[in-house]
Image (tube, rainbow, N blue to C red; front, side, top):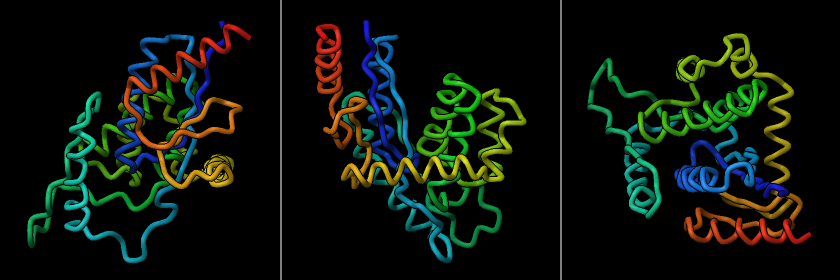
Length: 219
């Protein structure tokens, strides 16, 4: 049986990418080795905003995560708390500055193998959307890397950052742009010109994968 291989462009700061990832993981459990998923980088925030991000405004933005959280077959989301006025030592971390650091960490983990990538990939999404962690900060990335049990030496490629990994991230983003992708999540069957954008319902993904599987088995 030829496996169905999907290419998925996503960003670790995108709530709908988290929903799509959760649904695809459910299907990965159903289809097993018949489904392969390759995650590719898309940069919603390619660089830090000048002057940083307003914590109160960001916390209000995360209230919008309640919408994807209410979807069927959706993972858990936890909006970030509003910073306490005048609190000198707030326990709340700063909002992520930009998309690149999380993608770098994920690419560095991928060098350790598929299982290492999947462990850190899941940890990054959980940290940002459930645990209110700044996944653009070196301390958070170090903590997540070590929590996933990954080799200490591999972390340097993410924190340095590694020029080859940076080039890969930007190449994948440019590839998405060349395909006309303007938002994520975006998926396509490997080698296909057709791209599906958005976190589609689980049943739609299931039918799509099933049809692709049937077409490959008949080929």
